[in-house]
Image (tube, rainbow, N blue to C red; front, side, top):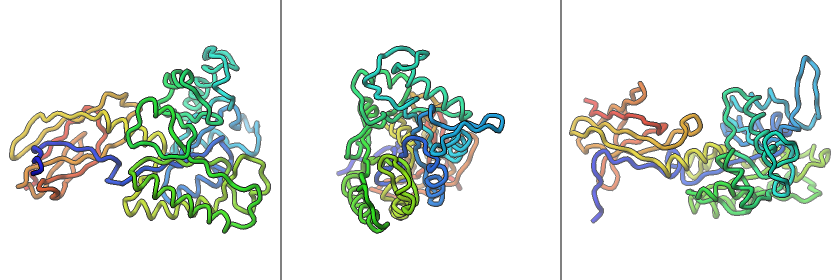
Length: 358
């Protein structure tokens, strides 16, 4: 016989809103195409992406003078993307082989600590009220010594590898997040060729991520219309048509609750908040429950809402939920002979008050 849980018990969903798996789209090197093409495509479908940039190559606008390389984005464009909910993350300051650099210090160019610190510093300076918590290793190379320094500046680090990530990575695994790079033939004759590869990638997501409830990460670089691919010499360019096809499928899969699509930062926040979640029942009666929920993380960084389920008395047919000055009316539901409500809440010393709504 299954053990009956007590009223006031709080359960945290593995993924937000009861989605089955997680997926992040990441784009490297700060290309202008990320603003002109990728941003538009993702916004059309309501998705947020992670954009790993090297501050050294980002263009500037100073007193109407443009210091430009037309292939790369501008800071004001990146700031706009951040305001829209996309993640602007670090790819080091200048894209060197980090594991071959002397440790140095934060002020000395050509050293590891300069590359890690200066990239984060500039991103947070150029984008107001923003925390850069995530980095992608240039070329995917790193080692345990590098990871130790990375952890002083960042909460997560994307590496290489062709398998999805666990739904609960260890601290070491958060500094070695697997990601899948799509490799393209040098000569691509027609968009249909890309779409054949898209079908194989979708099969990979279904088999390796959705069926195992894991977190998959896509790596892409420059993204252009198929007709423009021949005009670039960038590394493994992706076509707009391929990305649109992927987003179309992801939208449908998300609506079926098969997959949650979000930035690397937000998935990182959700996992760590979930895995270190704690709560205490302050008051419990047949008419009222008071519950405090919390985590041990910095609230200025870890501010992503968790999806939680709370067990309430079976006699409650409507529930008034109050927290942080807000009130909601929740309709309970039955599962496994228990009565639940579901809500989303940021877990930082929040007092939740639940009452039977009569």
